[in-house]
Length: 230
Image (cartoon, rainbow, N blue to C red; front, side, top):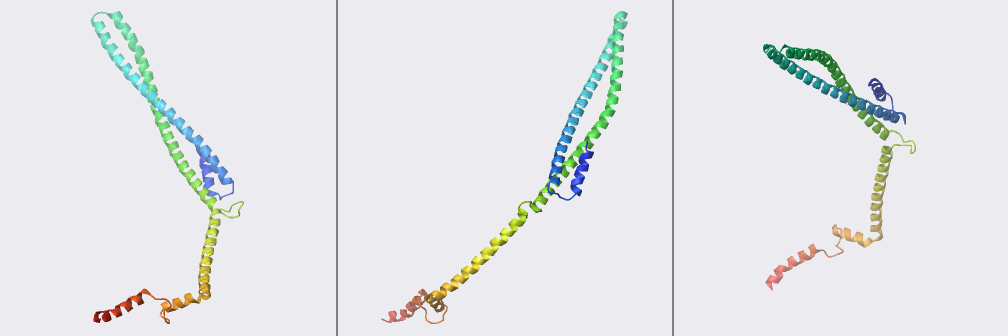
């Protein structure tokens, strides 16, 4: 059941990406894995039922053994009381039960051996199914990554490449806007010489154009001694 799936999964790991081939192969793999998983679940249910029936057989065997022991005790009592016909009936029933017991014991021993092998095979199948599912996740992730990095059929470039180009365009526009703002500021200063004069005055290059609060405060402080004298 698993050999074709393993071959298919190995092919997905070893072959390069194609536009549509990998996607179809992954779809087919997922479908086959679902079929395999259903088969494993059916095997689990069948094995569980077989084990339950085996338990029923063991319970029946215990009941038969108890019935044989009880009938033997009662047959002995019948013999002691001289009730041989009744003891014979018990003996006939015991003989039938012993035949059933022997057949049931043989069946239980044989099926125990079969169950051991079946359980081992089921565990092996479950392990292989888990490994295949891990492989399926790996090829699915790889397919998505390759799809993100590969060239698009219509746009001629991947979404990542388009995003990189867009980011570069935005940065270029922002840099251009900053340069334009600086140039506009310098041009505005040339158009308004009073603004340039004010900047030069504030920098200590010549007399200030506007009265500053610091200058007023300094003047007030210098007038304090005169006010005190008067």
